Image (tube, one colour):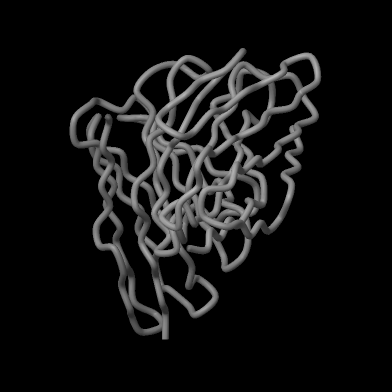
Length: 117
Length: 110
């Protein structure tokens, strides 16, 4: 089946630094990629939707200047958490979709656990 | 916006038992997803279905569009099935954005 990878799988950083997370679709071209955040014992929450070559669409309450998303190609999207703070510590998951909504499944990456000290 | 309810929240079973996890949603959809999240956090997409039933190995997923309800069944459960099972549906109609249930934590004891 389709494979989505994320890198790194975990990262620990100091408060105030920026962290970049990569999401790659390994064996298919993703028209759309999604970024989710999951706090402990909570559901996944959509942060933003990213289409290749265009600006990401952010969900209400998600700061676009803090969570920078770049979807440079059909196989790569990056999420940069700028000036990270301890409250940004979370599990960040991406997914990639090949086709149209309702006709193709989203394939999820393994996630990146971010801990900000 | 679609709302998703899963039951039960937690489920403990003995190896070999038949497992059923339920999912209900409030707004008509084009397709529903069942996902599996392992203790380490990684998510695997199990099924995407829009009608009827799908089977993959010991996993069976059914959906009733009229009743806005889906079930995930696991036959001959095994300790390696222990995970959180999550139901997800489009936020609105044919939207590509998903909303997720809170998950059902399944523990299968040997």
